[in-house]
Structure formats: structure tokens, C-alpha cells
Image (cartoon, rainbow, N blue to C red; front, side, top):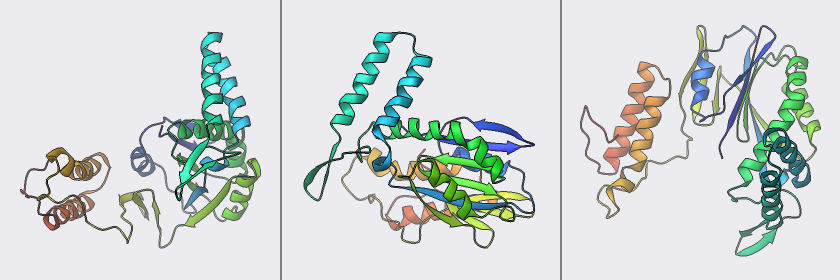
Length: 269
């Protein structure tokens, strides 16, 4: 399960951005007011799944079920599901089968959902206080990636992460500050401009344009999957005209380098 949680503080009021796909972020950030002292920071939760407490998370889920599901039999079945899957907490690494004594198994399909219960419970309890204490103007989270808009003149990012760490000692965080008025976060670059926040599509320097070549014997739907994804991202992200044209040229170059046919007005959506 992939969820994002966003909290925007405007005039002392807190707004929750509805969970959804992470491409909502660039729409939300561009509509967010920019202040002279506003700065961006990206915070990553290190090794999230293996540091989520199994017992505490079970208590959080049990409480949520008690509040939301009136049927006790259904509640018991879901708690039994939780207990069964956490007892089978094993995964493979370097050709060895390992069992975690604590934390959630990497790669398990249920780990994302259980981690989300744990993190949202922490946010519900502590986030309002921390945002007020540190004058955090905007808080956005997608899985284990957090984006903050804060006032560096009021509080340091080190103080913020120290308070985050105090919420649960096993959680570790790494931070990245904006440089030259921009910050790379997930697959977008957020730019601070005189007129507001602007976004563009970000690619890591190590990314190559190698995809399944058009001349391969793979099914057509497999070969065109990456192209569809790139065009869908381009059309769903809120980018400006010059960014759109640059990204479209990049997609055409990827297609050309992998021998795909290119037409000026059409693409495989």
C-alpha cells in the first residue's frame, strides 16, 4: 500500500491532504504560499520496515479496529491475520533465510500497510505540537520520504530531526537541504522562484536510457510500458511549458536510442 500524508499549516489551521499517489505533491507544493524565510528540507526514514515495532503497531491496529469495525468477529480475524504474518517474519538475503526478532520483513506485501499504521499514529499524536514548536509551515510524507517547509531562522533542521528521533528511538533519519533554491525530492525537483514554488521532473545522474529495445521479441505491451509511464507522468505532473518540452524531448531521445518509431504528434498512450 502506498500512501502519502500531507499537512499544511495556514494561519494556524491544519489541513490534511488526502492520501493518494505521490504525483499529488507537485500540485500541492505549487499552490502553497511562499514566504521570504521559507526553506525546503528532505528527510528520509532509514530502514523503516525493519525498525517498526511489532507489538506497538499491533496495539495501534487493534485500537483502530475497535473504533471503526463494530463486528468483534471481524476484528478478531484481522488481529489473527496480523499475528500470523508477523510470526512468519522471514526473508532471504545472500541466499540465506533470515527471521527478524523485531521489525517488519523487507519485501513482504503487508509491511507497507503496517508501517503506515505506525507512522500515522505517531503523526496524529505528535505532529501538531512539533509543527507549532518548530514553525513548520508544510509537512508532506510519502512512505518514508518526508518534505518539510520551515523557517531556518527560527529553528535548525538538527533540532527538528532530534525531536523526530525522540518519538521512537529506533527510527533514524537522514536529511538533505535545499541548495541554490532547489531540492530534489522523489522524482521531482522543487524550485524556489520569486513568484512561488515550481517543479520539474528529476532523474538521478546515474540513470541510463536503457529500456527493452523495440527490436526485442518481448510482447508489445511490455516494450511500451516504460514509454506509457513516461508520458503518463508528463501529462499528470503539473509542469510548465518549457519543462514539458524538455521532458518530451528526453522521452523521444530514449525512444530513439532504443529504436522505437517516433511520430511528431502521437505517442503510445
